Length: 344
Image 1 (cartoon, rainbow, N blue to C red):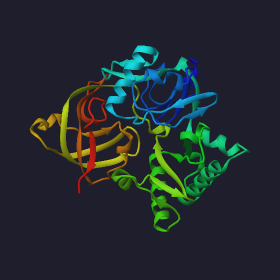
Image 2: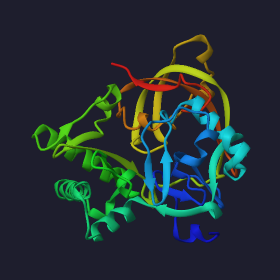
Image 3: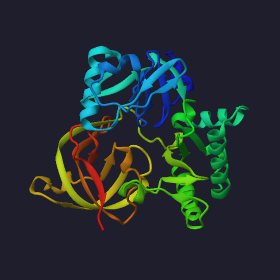
Image 4: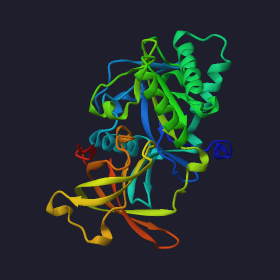
């Protein structure tokens, strides 16, 4: 498996299964040469008792393995508990990142058994002759969105349970759109189709109402997310170092949303306004960006909109040039009280 990187460029949302049967989702786009920074989605039933977290009652089957899933995947408490479990029982998956001086979950390439890329999974589904109703609906939806948005089929993918072939008739359709411009075209098209009654917007909470990334097609729930094209990946692992400074709470204006749809979601900002004394900063330390590691805060604000942010100030330094700027990270895994909220 040492040559896996020769054929696979891991991108956010790619899924892989390890030799032990863990199912991971790739996180972001910066990865060491011999491992992939990721988060765990499914745990083999035989390892359930090792992870002291609450589980959903449902079970999933992947091949001959039975899998379970955490009730809440992305809380700081669960993340730290999962890290401690891997450190104790599966140390190969524990990684201390020298550029972030932080403990991370990541899988060594040698432990990866199978990779599921959304684009390849969609192509495989199209070739499959024995499609069930959900798989046919997924293909119909992709074709419909491609035709209406003028985004080529090769810029779509399918992930989630359909991609892993462990879906049920109740499963959602999880779609990927490659490229920021393509995503905006699909987003605009879906908005138009909702207005015309071809699709229906589904909102479970205030975030869904803003992001509008969930919908219903022929009475089936679907969602869509963005993944960077290879040429949109501008930073390599180890190019920058990140030093956490302190928590801050502030209001600001989004000046650029061109990378807001990805994970991590990046918002360039202006008009930094502290909301407590601890968040007062000298001019040179005022952040240029807000970066959300939490997926639900993707695409919740657009150019010119004001947002309230609770996160951690970081000093970012280019390793070779020494150039420094500051950003605020939401989703550090150190607090449950980190968020981005639009200000009306």
